Length: 121
Image: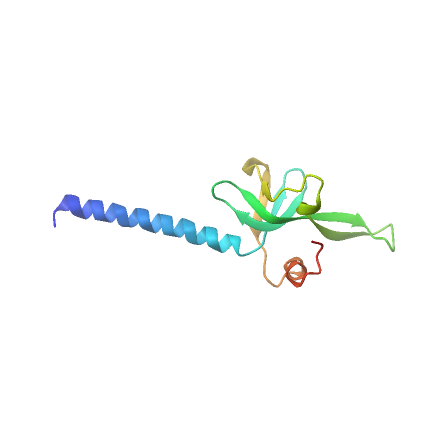
């Protein structure tokens, strides 16, 4: 095998590995919930995707609301973005507006309430 053939095969293997890693990471993030905190102070939870652009599917908005039993206290709720007046199927996010994002644990209260159906739909 000539040196040129070896280099071509090596480059092709690297390309295939890179594509495989991209597809694997995309598949992994689509099957788990992530949180995204924006510069506007809004917090969204959903299935985060980086390809072809930053987006959330099945998104919920994390909101702080007054406690109905005690107006001096606040409580939290999640509201599905699909029930908003604008009701998008996918929420596309400007990456420059993201303060932080990260995966949520399957044992988190938010993920449990979404999976158990106790979160609004």
